[in-house]
Amino acid sequence: MRKKRTTDSGKRQKHIALFISSLRKGGSERVLVNLAEYLSGQGWRVTMVTQYRGEVEYPLPEGVCRVFSEITPEEERGGRIGNFIARFRKLRGIWRTQQPDLILSFIGKNNVMALLTSAFLGIPTAVSVRGEPKEEYASRLLRLSAGFLFARAAGVILQSERAKDFFPKSVRKRAVVLKNPLNPDFVRPPFSGEREKEVVAVGRLDANKNHEMILRAFAKTAGRFPGYRLVIYGGGELHGRLSRLSEELGISGRVSLPGPVSGVADRIYRAGMFVLSSYSEGMPNTLLEAMCMGLPVISTDCSGGGAAELIRDGENGRLVAPGDVDGLAEAMLFYMEHPDRAAACGREAAKLLERYRPDRVAREWMDYLEGLMRK
Image 1 (tube, helix red, strand yellow):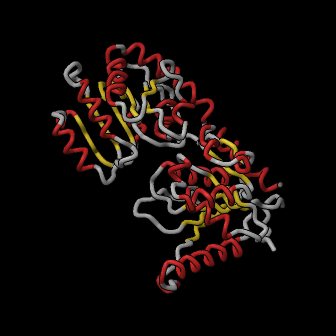
Image 2 (tube, one colour):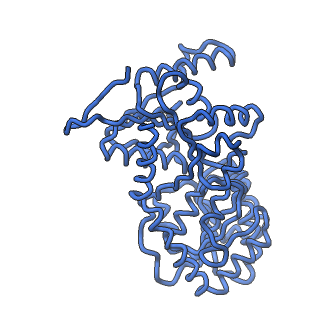
């Protein structure tokens, strides 16, 4: 039987369990932590269930309980099947013990595991696909599992309308698109002075983010606009490779790779332009943040559809094909040559802020989750 708690006013306290691998610093993790903070502030009881503790994580708001689902060495049963059964039982035991009114899971295999382990417990379970579905569910087994299990979920939350096309009709009719709440650090008036001659990018240095494309495009602009610099914020396994490439392209003196940093909003606020070069994204948080601050932006029309839903090409930003180095260089040059047009794109982009204000979007999430509980 579900545990009932009441607030000081005597009302029954809603209880949600949020499930994700860890709280390491990434876009999906930040969205979930921000949501936990908002729901807790609205009087909900929030339990954060993660598999493990990462090295660098977002701190949890006061009052949010954390439970770990990964098995300990003592709980291991040996072999992949034995350990899977141990993980299954431990997570199912958490749901039995916590008895939340709703489980909300984020990302890939977590979604499948949440639905499997909560089956027949009488606890509605919603799943959220945070990236490009064909990347999150790349294997045939995962695709089949998602197609079968998601049709039985209480709700399916996607990042873009285009993402619905990946799933069968039985899943699409349960799917909704919910916006990402904007990080409060990026809620500010657009910068109105003369922008710095700086091209900026933010994101993990991995193959999907394709920062090599930005380096090669920037190199094509270097001779015509020697005053510009390129700064790519973020850490990852390709840091050394990108550093060597900048030397090979002869632009190392004008390229900075500072790694993960704090205060990103302050660092990019006055930049001349922001660039996103990913092959695949759901709803790219960094692009949204840059646009809401009024930066002139350029993005690849990455699979997943989020960038294309944000950008009206030529009006509030520029879209280029993934991997199109010449197209990116041309878009960069356009902003460099026409700072007035760049500023106009930035002003138009900043209009997104009203739609993505943190409290407004978080309220939309809360209303949706409350609806799932009522069902």
